[in-house]
Amino acid sequence: MPHSPRRLLLAAGTVLVALVATTGVRFVANADAAPVRATAAAFSHPGVLLSRAQLDFVKAEVAARAQPWASAYNQMAASRYASLTRTPKPRATVECGSYSNPNNGCTDEREDAIAAYTAALTWYISGNTAYATKAIELMDAWSATLRTHTGSNGPLQTAWAGSVWPRAAEIIQHAYGNWPGQARFATMLRTVYLPVVLAGSASNGNWELSMMEAAVGIAVHLDDRASYDRAVARFKLRAASYLYVTADGAQPKYPPAGGIDTRAELIGYWQGQSTFVDGLSQETCRDFVHTGYGISAIAHVAETTRIQGGDLYPELQDRLRHALGLHTRIENGAAVPASICGGSVTRGLGPISEVAYNALHHRLGVAMANTGTYTEARRPQGSNNLFVAWETLTHAGNPA
Image (cartoon, rainbow, N blue to C red; front, top):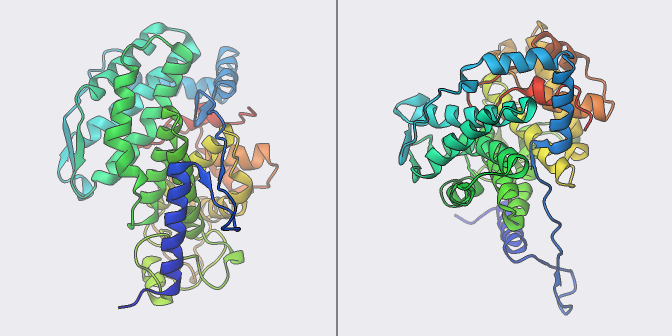
């Protein structure tokens, strides 16, 4: 069967993006002109989800016992992730099936990654070096052992853990500094995680968004400009096709992968939804939990790009504000219109609103009443035990 023009154009664009990412050569319209080699700017470190200035803001607010940061810090410190007696549970092969069946090391890996990040944050804020030592112990245990992820949910598992490890590693390597095993940990990120997440996914959008979050964070930690640029390019396509705004036209944008080329296929991919309103997600009619995963990953990538000098928030502003507004309004108790998912949804957005709310409302001045109500009522927002953790502490009202 011949390929559609849209699919052929997308394939050509993907090849071009890959060439730019891997060679650093920027192609120009004049074929007779010599290619122009782009000059890659250095990455800022720490620079995955949190900058040093953001960390310093949090540290000062906790020291002053200001709210909501003090209560958020206490929540983190009381969690199982902050335990100094935690024993890492690494495996050479982490096997993850659909709906956690089987679950051979999947929860252990995700939670050890969150624990390493928790310990790194606790060290930075408290100054207690025992927490830096614990973060290093957790990262070293996994880098000495892990070789692969298998099972139907293997790519998503790789993305979730791969999103969190670089946050911990950035703080330890670039703020603490005394980490003899850093090179081995970097090798693990480069060989076990990056090839999987950088390849993307044709599954539901939250998969690929989380994979691009992991790829962006890993690329920053590895100072890998080619992988970073490739991940950001793919992320932009997926984010634009995941959250609908009326400027898109009569229907959402087609996803960058998955063989979806007709309106009928697109409606099926959107869980049967055929009426589109500002802020609707590809997974709204599936459930709000998975929608929250996608929105969170979008905000995380935007936050990292802002730190790295290529701020995507202005480009994503309308999609994020409408998506959060629509879903938090329903979470706050509003009735579901019959035109959305037949008037029935499964709520459960999760602790995912702080990063985008701070960026859009506090930094950019966007009015977000529903999101504000949702966010403030749930403070301190903790962890979803997958890849979201302590975002009231790190991002509530953070101006840096």
